[in-house]
Length: 366
Ligand SMILES: [Zn+2]
Image (tube, rainbow, N blue to C red; front, top):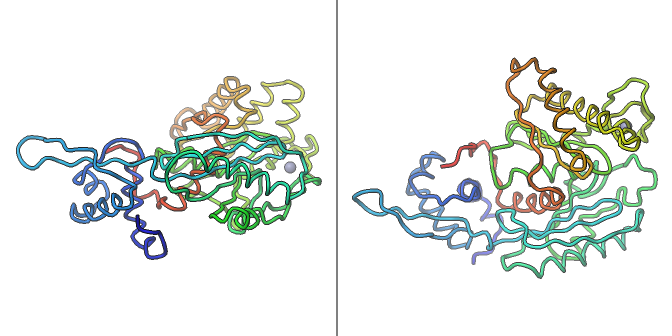
């Protein structure tokens, strides 16, 4: 198998485009790929043989459509690559190892102490990653970590937090873990990781989408025109700190009436309808602001009351968007359940290696 390196990345965009089509799970053929990606069949042959040589794709057999040479079918080789994904909260670590298609091979759950000192946290993270690395066979590409934000994904550092006791603020989680594990590490905001994971096996489906995540807090991530939005300070999507009630409940961020404060207070009062109303307001505001066609909901707080939440959001969108004048917006529950962020963090590693500008691949299967 050829090692990957800077020169390998030059061919990466074409290879990634073919892999993105194959990732949907259907067998692919040279002619169909050439039409879909608007390159010559000869170029596709080169890409397919390069991907096969690297073990990422393999011939599945051939079929005949009438007279002439039979068509060779190719498929992705899920077990050829692996990535580890970790969802880190202040009390728990949920880790997975996933194959090239984002399918989970194994899980680990470890409780951690709130405010655990950074060196101990790194050692717990590393030990979970080493444990997960023993499962599956393909080349291990690295470790992704999704954590509550804001997070600077370039530096791999959690930024200032609204929680004054947060012992991890400003810690170089990525660099420390990289030194400990000696493999690539990627750290990002939990909701961004979740959004990448949600669309990894269906490239193009969530090109204009928001993912609203309700775990211990409330946040969102956006992909607009095929690109995940990070913003000038990696803080895009902090929907939990947008105000939904003037003069409302105090929020640790210093303001009043933030969506997160109102949502958590409603949950504490066991007022699920009010909590759902808050979420619906956040979703409608986001849809109005950035014009998406899909909204994905995920996170433990949402799963606990998903029916009332989905109903409230659909009703709010119907009312707020004047029944179709704005275009249809689909509201979906995450397909990944509680694995959402861990799987997403693993998929961010896969995307780093094999992702592509998704404008190259439309949502339709070949
Ligand atoms: Zn706030």
